[in-house]
Image (cartoon, rainbow, N blue to C red; front, top):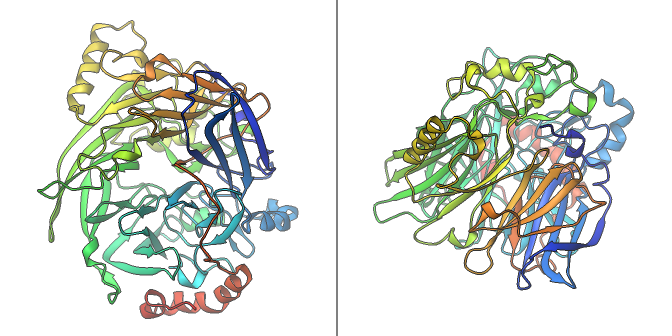
Length: 590
C-alpha cells in the first residue's frame, strides 16, 4: 500500500473555479444546504504543506439535473503580496514554519485552517494571524477581524505582528458572540531558542464592535490552544503540543522542548467575564494523552457535569515537517522533493479517543471519569465531525465520526521516530508494529457505550482471530468503513438531513480529490454516492462547516488594511513592551 504524496498539493488552487459535477450513485433529491471547506493555497516555492493563504471551497448540495455545483476562490489577504515580493530572495529567508510564515515585514496571515458559521457570516481562521471574513455567496474576501492594535500581540514584528490565537473559535448562538483566545509570548528563561511561554487572554467579539480581552490569572501555556472549548458555563483553553519557539521562527536546527505528556485544560467560568474587569481566575484540569481536537457538549447536567471527547494521537507533531535532510525511518532512504514539508501527522501508533466527564461549580473543577477507545488497527486520528443538531440539545452528542489517516511507513521520518520512540503515551512497541501499511478508516463511535469495555472486546477478538486483518476487527461492534488502498480520508462534515443525516467526505487518491457521500447510520455499506471530478484536485484540505443557506453579507463591519498597518507600526511595539493592560484590554476603537 502506498500513498501518492503528489496529490497532497495542488498548484492550481490559486485560480477561481465554478463547475457542475456529475453525480454517481444515490444522491438524495432533497439534500440541501452548503458545505464550506478551507485548504491552503499550494505554491511551488512554499516549503510547508500548510503554507499559503486559505482557499475556500463551497459545495451546493441541492442536485440540479443530476449535478452538484462546486466553487473555489482564494482569499485575498496580504500573503500573496508578500510572497511575490520575497520570491527572489526566498532562499536566504528562514525556513517556512507552521502555522505561519515569517517575512521581511512581519508574519503572514494565512486564514487557511478552520472556519466559523457566525449566524450566516463566514469567518476563516488559523492558529496565527487575524481571522478574515468572506462573503459566503460570492466568496469574495471582505475584511480582517480587528485592527492589529485591537489584538493581543504575541510578538511585535514590524508592520504585521504575530497574533497567536486558535484556529477553532466558538460562535455561541445563544449569546451571539465569537469566543476565542489570544496569546502574548515571552522567551523561556534559560532556553531562548527552544520554546516560548505565552500568557493567555480570552477574547470576545460581538461581530460589529471592538474586541474585548480578559487575561487569565496565573496561566501560562507551553504550546498553542488550537481550540477554544465553550459550554453554557465554561470557556476551556487547552495547552496543546503545537510548539513554536525562536528557533523555529529563525530557521535554526534546534529541537523544541518535549511537551508535557498529558492534556492540560484551563477552565474559566463565563459569569466571571465582567466588562469592567481586566483579568479572571482560571482552574486547571489534567487528563491522560496528547490531545489535538475536542468535541464537547454545550449543556451541563443538573449536577454541573459536562461531557467532552478528546481526539488524541501519540508519535506525531504537526508543527514539525519532513525536511530535505530527513530520511525514511524504516528504509533509511532519502526523501524525494515532493515529500518535503509534509507534517509529522502520520503516526506509528494507534489513535485514541478519550471520553472525559468534567465536574464544575463556582469554585472547583475536576475530572470525574475518563474512558479511552483504542482500536489496534486504526492509526493517525485526523478530522472528526458530529451532528450539529445535537450541540445545544440537553442530552448532548450521541456519536463522534472519526477519520483515521492510517499507517504509512514512508511518511515516518527518522527524526519523528527518534522523537517519539520512548514517549510514555505510546501504546505499541516496535515489535508490535505492523510490517505492512494500514489503511485509512472512517468510524462512528457511539458515546453512550463504555469505551474501555469496547476496547477490551476488540482486543479479545484480536487474540481469538489472529488471522483477521487488524483494521477489520470490531465489525460486529462498530459501524466503520475501510478506505481502499492508496486512498486517505481528508475533510469530513456531517450533513443534518432527515433523521440520520449524511457524512460528506473528501478523499485523496490516485485520481486526486474525490467526494464520497455516506449514510451516517450505515458507514459500512460504503459511499451511497460519489462526485465525478476528472479534472479537479484541491490537494490536502482541512476543516469544514455546514450552512443551511447562504446569502450576501449584510454586515457593514470593515477594517481598512492600510490604516491597520500604519496603526500597527505606531502603537503595537509600544503597548507590547510597556505592557499597559488598560491600553489593550479596554481600548476603544472608532
